Length: 516
Image (cartoon, rainbow, N blue to C red; front, top):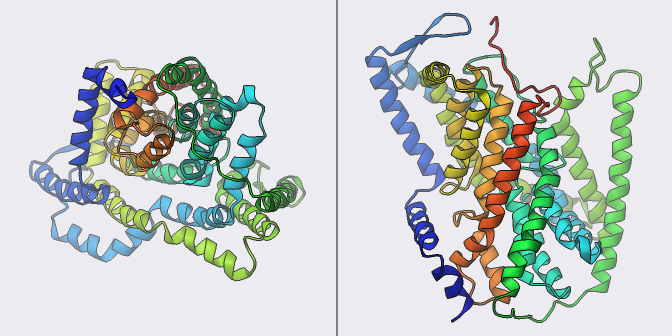
């Protein structure tokens, strides 16, 4: 009996459950279609609620809030005339596009793949697993490079070390997918989610600002947690199980290219020096007289934090240019411009999604249904005496469940944030805390859902070494990681919440209504 049948037939109940999830998910339409259907449903519901006279009092100032029909002539006229502003004014749009210009140059010049390869190949054998998971957690800064580069590289490095290559693949998958939201640096995901969270928070507090660094401290703390947990699961559970099965196939190893390796080393040195010089320049602007990156009134670093998008954009751009010139992947200014353009052009699908997400979020605000649902939900939670922490754990579970069927983190948060963020604000939970809970849950089940965009790629890599490896095999392989990461990340969140640690610079777990 081959390994695929052993792995997938033995846990019959698990396989049937996963098959049912797969069939249900395959019937779901594209996220863009989901938003279009949601917009149509929202317009009908708003008309019904307005006709019924549904309303409530705003807890912030006591003013009445009434449901507004989106089918009313004035609302249709407003939508048609303001559509361009709705799209261009959507908070995450500018952040993501600016970041992708810099990231596009760094990624296509080869900086990210060279850095990941160098990191994994340079570590001693006892630290190999830990390094791979750690690199995976931080790979989200490089867009898709973690999936495309690190996963097959980790399998090959394990094979070269005499260890099971699928175990190396699973360790890197745990870091890249399970730790997708964790990172030591700010990524485009921070800008994307914080913009949506801010739009949702302004349903209650029109002046509320969610910084891109709003979850930075927690996300940094999550990196070592997932790295350690992933290492333990790989070496104590996953790899012994794989070694107990049939032997793996060792395909012909790829030949090293000494000239390319030398170019990559030159590029990495140049990129490192460029980043060091740039960091010194930013430090000079922040601490030198003149208050270029500090508030002249009180000397705090709020301008530095609010300017991180521009700072990171230039960091990626300069590092990518330095690497590309030294490694000779960039030979002219045209090459650099082309790489930057490709970074943005590949966001075409995202732009289509953002258009309809922006329309949905805007209409949700115009209808007042978000505020009304938040008020009624908050009243219910207060009536049953639900505390902040149990509610946030429920948010984690909701994110985990929806992630099994909808892979896009931004698509899910665009739908969930207009309800969850205002509702939890009304019971004293900050938008940043709600966003952090969502992020933990969203990444946890990335490892076992077949609807994750790169799931087929991972199967193909595994089948290089185990031709009989199937979807059920992959899910069974990654399930221990999912359970362990959920337990560990939730425990970290509980500690963070109970000890009132800041989620980011100056970010609290609590929220107080204006004038409350």
